[in-house]
Image 1 (cartoon, rainbow, N blue to C red):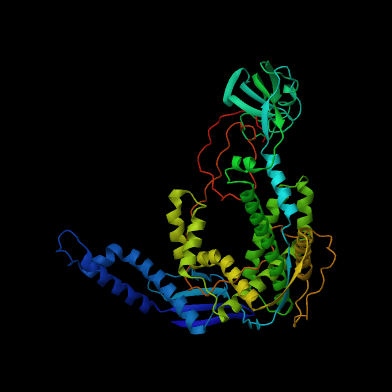
Image 2 (tube, helix red, strand yellow):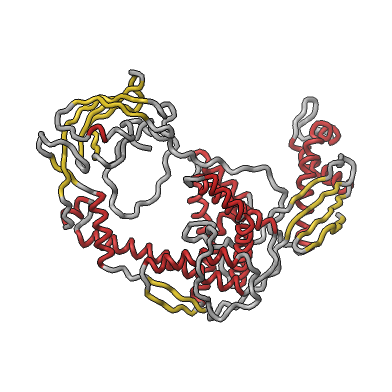
Length: 544
């Protein structure tokens, strides 16, 4: 094989690989000799089919297989011979004028990872902002739990329902005189003024008494989730079976037992643990941003454009999605477009930090174990339909880039934890509001710093957060500033035309959702994926 370097500019490399026709033919002959003994053909004893007949019948298929295998092996040899570290999957192309019997010319275009000097990790100075969980915060949270778990008792039968009262109703809904799916229910609780049913439904029940029978007319919102009902007028026959008034929630052992706990002390313990977990997460986010700022300030090196493009596309997709949720979508999109260059600068900063963290991790032996990787794959597989999960696992196992993308967030966290262990950390108590403000200021400062080249030397200590710039920060997640570590070197392979299986679709909403049930206590429940089948339509007219 002849290797000719055609491009060597910055991190970009391009090569032309010339594979002699004689080498390809030798491999085809070897394949024919391998498969001939396994073939059966009328008129020949098993395994005695002549090679020329095997070539005539299967030569085209064997040639395609040999070409693919030869290209893959040649690219692997190129990477090894030139000691290349591809930043992303190389672009590999066989010359269009190639035909069997001719030399094969393969072009390989890629960007390589830059040489990054890992910094010394000892003695880095960081400040950890901590938030003590006060008894008052625990009591306030339990108060909100009580507010969300109101109880009601029967009122006098002569009482006219007003805001805050709960009605127990039966109803039947019709559109154009015909009952619709999900428009009928019995013993449905409805709190007047809660806004859980479509506009006009609750208002027309104000003043109702136990035993009343009413017919009301409402119009479904134009954006109602059940398209066959959206914007249509509906008539509901309603029977008021009871009017109930709110009872005062006494926060005691009985209240806690009503939530399935042993008593009020256990409820306080759980709430305190949840608050401590929340503030610990915020503390880690703030300290991680300090760490990344310190690293970014001391390092400036070129980064692969392909990696920046990929990171920018992720940021851009998130921004587009957020803009669709804004009241003035057009104005939001216009502002984002005006700041496009700023977001690309942020993408470049994150890629640079990711490469730096990757180099630190590799230099210091930070690894993800096989067990950890298997857990990551199993967790990711849960996002897909059950019948697609095995296909997703095979996809990740066979595609090095997909595996690298999956492991990247965990690898970054492990490197960050390693750096925290080596740093000199001082603690300072603050309020939760001060901690959240510090995180927000850091996010805005990231956007500002990303526009400027990094200094060659890190400053002695982090400067105080500057006043927020007028421009919108790019992302609102708590860990938005986190960089993604670069994938470790993957074997160079010709990109396969594989696709990951489609993720689970969101569960379909019933034609009309039920009125809101009592709110769950503030315990953190494990996240569950909605099943990919239609929910039963039981109750009508809930607000979207």
